Amino acid sequence: MESNKHTSPRSAFNGMPLVDGHSQGTAFIYRDILSREIEIRELDATEIAPEWERLRSALEQVGQDVTRMRNLLGAKIGERQAAIFDAYGSILTDDNLLRNLEEELHKRRLNAEKIVKNVMNEWEGRFRTSAGAAQKEWANDIHDMSMRILRALAGKENNVLADIPESTVLFTPRLLLSDTVHFVKRQPCAIVTQEGGPLSHAALLARSLQVPLITGVDFNAVRHNHGQEVVVDGSRGTVIFNPLEREKKACRELSNAYKRSTHIMLEHSAREAAVLHEHDYSVYANVSSADDIRNAVTYDCDGIGLFRTESLYMQYKSMPGEQEIYEQLYAALAPVKDKEITLRLADLGDDKVLPYLDIGAEHNSALGLRGIRFLLHFRDILKAQLSVFLRLAQHYKVSILIPMVTAPWDVGQTRSLCDELMREMRDDGVEITRKPPLGAMIETPAAVWGIEMLLPSVDFVSIGTNDLIQYMTAANRESLEVWEYYTYGAGLVLNALTPLIAQVKRTQKQCTICGELGGDYSYTNQLIQSGLKKFSVEPPLIPIIKERISRVIDTGESGNRKA
Ligand code: PEP
Ligand code: MG
Image (cartoon, rainbow, N blue to C red):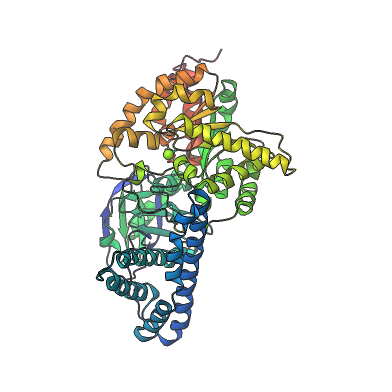
């Protein structure tokens, strides 16, 4: 956080409007973990002991992560390879290093991050300039360790978002998924970022919270405006600090008008629900948390079409246990206990990072270990998730969705593991009466072209246009620079979806769209013409899509005219 102690005059900035709406609040400047520089902070005498404690607990956390990785590797590849991690462990407990860190902290009276950087850099340099190959290896290990410690220290700081004040307008270079999980107590009333396209996590979150979002605003230009009054116009993309009275009044009026129109839309869609069901259309919700589910119920969802469960893992400082996740999900799903619920296995990797799980830098992470590839690699995580979902399926109408399916073996291996777990659970005396349907996300071009090979082994499919367009156009979904390619791809992808939907329909298996394209009402008619009947969208979009579907049915645009 960076604050401005002086009162500043009115100033205005323009960005790209991503989510509509009008808000007035107080600016909160936040740097995400990836763009945070190492800050240098001087400590007074009373802060030294707590800072040493903070550093010690970060070291402890990294130690636990290393042990866990060692065990995972031991089980997966072999004891000999896993022993490499022992060297890592020994760095963290090296008496000389610990003494060196503690002494520096006392001597320099600087924050833990700066001390780690100074001390570890020096150790790394010493080993790197020595002659032996083994010493050079040590230098790499030390470098890796220092990054992990800095990450552990930063992870603890993320919690500033857990306690944001009422009416916060959040300014950040970018908003990571691991940041958004901290909005438990209170949510921002508007978000302004520098990076991130319409499909970034910030955009998905803003849409689901129904708060305005503007992107493309230079973070450096606003970073000194912490604590200032600000109005945000999400339809025009304008941000005004220290606004004039008339600007504040206009913002309040527009905000009230926006709320009224949403309310009218909701009432309308409730009247249309029967028509939709009569024609077998459903509009489910995309959710990531218990709050989202409650919100989805308010918007009268027909069920949960996509639960992005990876966000559950992001609230923790280290890998949560199976029972913890089970209890969280069991409580979160209660409001939709009589409805269909699709739980997606954690889609980790690439932009969805777990701060406490370092899988090593991948050269091109969007094309690397993502989704089911990640889970098949870290099988213990997959097993734990499947066990939780299987247990939940005995209480709720749960289906399991596999993210980032590319090839038939992604489904085959998941299904075998699922069957094996069910056998084990039965042997352990757990009552398993319901086997949940297993479905594939269709979000890679290979899954579209290879749908014929996938269909025999899945019970349903869900089309993820967010990633599908990204991989089809080779344009990063988070990047503003290549956004025009992405938009161009949105039109093109429909050509691929029409035959795909028809092919799935022939097998009588359910086909849902859960990518953002399904929530864009300008595509609803075309999707219906292609034969699609199941939509899963951000909760506030549910009434809008329902209304649009009922209009298509009414006017007979889809050929499904009411009798
Ligand atoms: C998608 O890719 O369309 C999708 C729904 O998944 P996510 O946005 O979580 O990657
Ligand atoms: Mg996806």
